[in-house]
Amino acid sequence: MLLSTRTKIGWLAAWSFLFCLFIPSLIYAQDFSLNGTLRGYYFSSTRDLDEETDIFGSSFQPRGTLKFAPYLTLYAEMRFIAAKPWKDVYSSLREAYADVYLESLDFRIGKQIIQWGRADSINPTDNLTPWNYTLLFSDDSDLRSGVVALRSNYYYKNIAFTGIWIPFFEPNRFPLPPNYQVTEETPSETLGNSQYAFKIDSTIGILDWSLSYFDGFDPMPDLSLSTSGIILKYPRIRVIGGDFATTLGKFGIRGEAAYFFTEDMDGNNPEKKNPYLFYVLGVDRTIWENLYLNLQFIERVVINYKNPMDIQNPYLRDVAVKGAIINNQLDRITNAISLKIGYKMFNETLNLELSNIYNITRRDYLIRPKITYAFTDHLSGIVGADIYEGKENTLFGLFEDNTTFFAEIKYGF
Image (cartoon, rainbow, N blue to C red; front, side):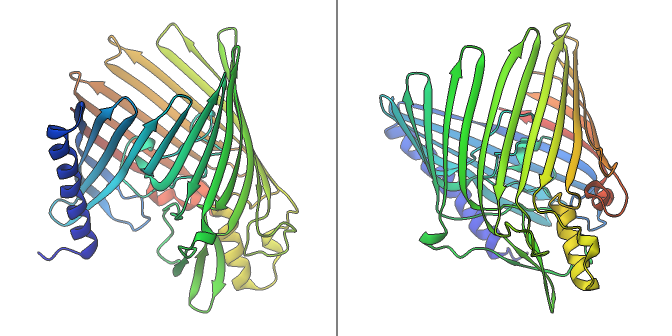
């Protein structure tokens, strides 16, 4: 079987990863560690809206750390995926970076995952590194991958100042129905298209808080009409945000908000997102030491809103509505709630979870039940489901065909 160029490059990167970690560790490193995850899985449906079912596969995710000195550490993580074994093989370098530690300053340079926000799972300020919503993983954190970046942190008393430079843009990957004839236009890789971010982070008593600013490209696209179909374009945005976390008695209180400045500040172009305010307020509590509850209220407010349903041109209206659904701008105000329930049993070897996001405005929802059982400290089994439900012009209704049951066996070393 002939391998694609992408696969060949992936495997070459994998061998380079192993060589660069193992050989220098024998000679120079003060400390070397290698761990990772090996898993086999079954999904009853893909997450690509392609109507493919009964997907069996496996993945291998090795991670290595080299500590050369107290001030220098190298980290790398590879990912190998074989879906429908021996037919589709994919490999990638998920993260590979160097950490340099000085007295009150540290740097991280290389491919890295940068996650911002203190709200649970839904983070308005988290716009720096991409998600791939088509991957078949039961844990949402595995849907992320890194970007090449330079990050620095300066610490002064109880305040941390963060600066980030991202030279290349990588968008989110998400499923679109097969009847969408799309092409993609990504920003050119020039110095002028670099992305920047800054954050101030601090703790005052029981209050953790941060303020942040991002100037870069939107990981979710605008949809534009062309003679050949739909074009996905990634506009420049600026985001001012902040978050906090504190406690009130036995309750945890979290909040996060961001205001998005887009290329269509007046809201006159139906092919571009309007500016909008996006915030999350949540409360959580652990009861009886093994029952966890988390409830969040989520709201998006579109500025200078114009109803895409009112567009006279039927082709432009169709594209504008699709873009509004994907980007949660179909309504001037969209309200939603998320609920997470977790219960641990049998000395925390059995973990029962139920997550739900319900769009109050459009009445569509996603429900995710999941059961995890730890057979040993290294071996666990997972069963669960993603259940999408909603009418035609809703976000979760759009992904209804991605409703799936999944099962995993996972070994960590």
